[in-house]
Image (tube, rainbow, N blue to C red; front, side, top):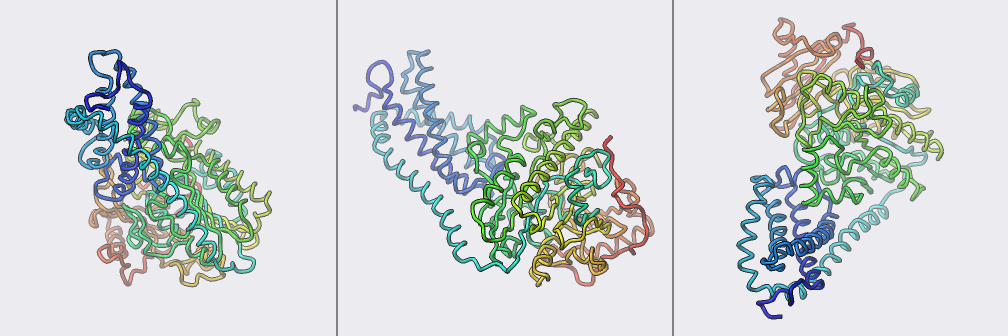
Length: 632
């Protein structure tokens, strides 16, 4: 074909257009997938690239998606160009394809320094310059598209095979090298109810019946009334739940967990267990954030078509616009029912070995949009929720009625999670697994609804953000109907699980074990650190910390310090809403001075020697928070 032609005749040639759009789409998609995969963990990642992490599967998902998008855009441009017959169809099509390629690449490369609208303007200028260069050589460009397409297709096939073979082979090697599990080893199921605060459980005194199934499970096991999370957001809290370490130790405070400590799935894999995780919080509890170690199967990001599509570059841009202009759900969110279905399907694939499984339910997280009928279960109207949305930059509420509506929708999400936990327990009983399964149910952090002028989470260490549900149940091994009012840390869960399963902790995880509390030896944990930490990820609304925040809690006092100097002190049992700061009272100054000695040395990531922590005696200082909370 002569270089001065693009398509002979007055209209485009379908086969030529197919070659052009497919070649451009494959080239762009392969570069995009590699770019997203590489840039997501570098300083180049900004709000667009950083909003979703991607698995290796994105290396070919982006290519397949871009082929479809480029084909659709190319044919649409060719058809619309008929409205301006003086402009050659080929010129219109070539500009659109070049613009899409340049825009895609620049969105990734300039994500940290330029927002997408400005990137689009820059891309249009670059595409116009490139069009002047390419248009005289359009015939050669079409020839190149034809010749390169087989190689691009072969590259795509190779990527698909490599990614999937790597996953299959790693699972096969892990299974082949597994030891034999100890005789009568129990199954272990850890359920994380993402974003559920303790005082919204009916079993902990809430006026609404939000958690009848959890209340029943608690009556068959041990309920900790005052469990304190290691942080007030997902990433560091999950790292603590898996390692038994506090954020200053494990380091997963802003970026992913680097594997410096043994995790629960690694410990159980070494004992011959099948290990798996099923996560609805694919933003943070995912292999891409360092949580894949020890899990032979991780059902997280990109496991569904919808979830894969929103993680492509153009999918992200559409999602950003959708979230900022709507009050609808986050695209690709996995409901608890789907998490259960995937877990039970995996459970039935292979038997003969005990399992260690971790589930993450995300339905109580903003935007609060549980499926019907739960969304409006406690509301004055059925369509509550959907206003607070961290992905849509909606992190405050202006109207008092909106606060109540969001709280109502949140309670509906908790009730939905509770119903699915009940359904899961029934499914395990039907399979004859209930008696042989140790179940631990916990939350990673709480949520604010205007308390201390704050909303959602990741913004403070007041009790609403760190006091979470924690219960343990295992028929015949854990006493039934026991309630522990002593404050405990969720970071003690790994030591507890290993102590129950092996009869001893074995030093694998720091403690103490929570078994000491129901065995009548709670004093053994009296000097252990009940610490929470928060390193701000980004600038938040008024009242949010802009410096690291630390919290130390004992039987009487809750000490919070920001930036290592600004201290607050609350007598949390008699002031559960933490309205009366006692840091400047004579007694408060003494307590603050002692509590400051208990803060870890963040420069060396070590605990300070000589801290007894028990800055007050466990005397009768007020009623348990189990009677607190209100549905009004």
